[in-house]
Image (cartoon, rainbow, N blue to C red; front, side, top):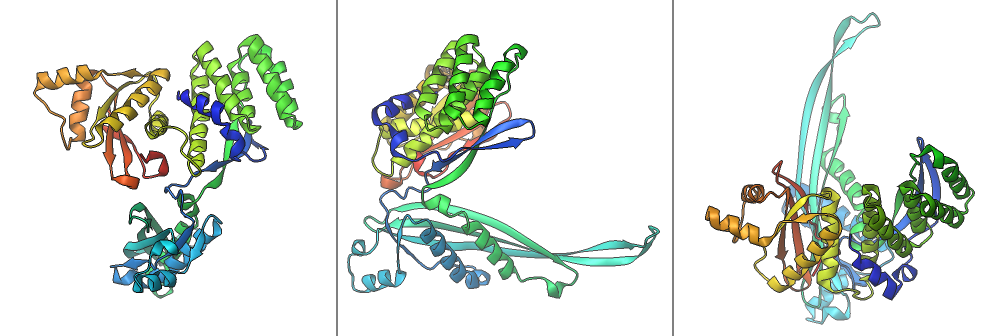
Length: 449
């Protein structure tokens, strides 16, 4: 899957220029040994090139939410500043520059804006029986619960061209239970707790950040090989990860143990050798075709794609169509497994040449992963026989009906939305057998074209 990533790594040595992996920590989860790895992730929003940021006061059309706007503005400003990725500029500076009709680009690169879209609350009461020590009911008591739900959204606006980055929409709920209604916190107080909780992870939307990954070491199914596997694992437990990796590679070379190959790949990843791990697992997949090896290769390639997303903060590495196609194919493979029969439908009305470039790259990746692709000619024939058209807005039920006739198990609907810097690929995955939506693309930088 996505073998083109190897060539990018070979030419740019990305894994050396971006600090993706931190120290390895070993933990035990039940009987399975896990390796914990600190990895970097790009933000959800495309904040490439943004350094000077002003946070505008949040707004709302919901009168009950008005007291929350100041707290939300303050929480957001603190979260953005804590990333260390931006220089915060007072919004008063922006106001003053606007009043003078001055060039805002001299002061900020973008303005962070947001609004509270809804605040609802509900209070309920419930009567409960009270029992004595003998189990006999001696009375009742009443409890009261108040629940508040708040929704808000935020986005960046580039000052150079007014283009919007986002939005991100968040919804949270909080509740409290007391013996009397008067003791319950107000809906505003509950909503304030939601805001503090939701903004606690805002950094993931705006700046590169670290996450903790865990990789589970494989157990050998062949009892005869377990002494060798245990010896390799002993070296890992002693902290000799490279020695353990070489021992697992030797077991693979001599016995073609899939467990040993996967463990070697984990240790490649843990010691900063993601490129070498991908190259090695490609050989394992080519040799064995084992589903577990394919899954591991897909996992490594997903990490490679994240790494490319981080490198995009410095410069573009591969053609946008190839980059986005790689990400789209990996996201589809999160919810659909080979050898599924895929129908990829171009539902876009603009930028047809670019969309078909993306689809061609996706098809190549899917074929490499063992999927079967429904030919466009077959779909055209079915449409002609059924006197149907797939222009404009098409209902999911129509995709399901046509997919059934074509013998497809899944349809991937590709669209293009937005313009300029906000243009992005949209991908939807429909399971034809169950007529359910399996995946919907997001708004992150990885989808931008």
